[in-house]
Amino acid sequence: MRGSPWRASRERVRDRQVKREAVIRAAAHAFNRKGYHNTSLDDIAAALRVSKPTVYYYVSNKEQLLFECFVAGIEPIRTAFRNARSQKAPARERLRTVLGHYGQAVASEFGWCMVRAEDQDLSPAMSAHIKSLKSEIDQGIRRLLREGRSRRIDPPVRSEDDCFRARRLAQLDRALVSRESIHDRRRDRRRLHHRF
Image 1 (cartoon, rainbow, N blue to C red):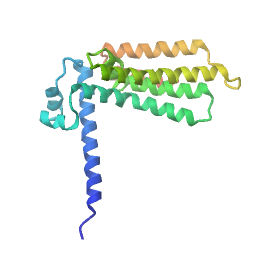
Image 2: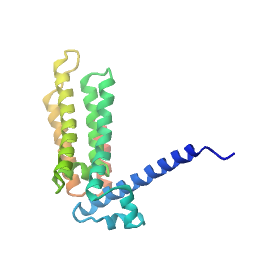
Image 3: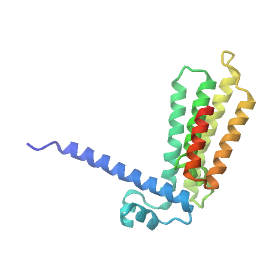
């Protein structure tokens, strides 16, 4: 008797997901290198050595690709917030962990998309969705700051520390916009990891 058809179906789903992630990674790399408006779906297809219709099989258009890159970059930060909510650690430690994930995400291959996605000429619905996700991250950081300041048992969350982290993250943002080399970004990511 042959194997279960459901197992083959699960393998096809997993295989499709792997290929879809490859399309999203190729798009992130192209957007980072050439910018959103200077990148075509033909460029992404050529980088993957597939046809343009193959790219369309995984995403409906370039705008969706930019959004998927944004989500791929921001999801580790959202996961860090979910984990922070379930931890018993002081707010300061949870904030440090979340900001570390934020810095790593901005320095990742999806960083340009995270930083610049909102600045592109996107549809109103897509812009609103991106702004909503960015607001979720902003509110999460503010919530941890308030919690750290309000609990007496936590070491105080000093505004100097907050300012340092904000300055450091802004530096990483500028580094992405100026398209520093991958080597420099990896160095910044290691430095950021050691700071937090």
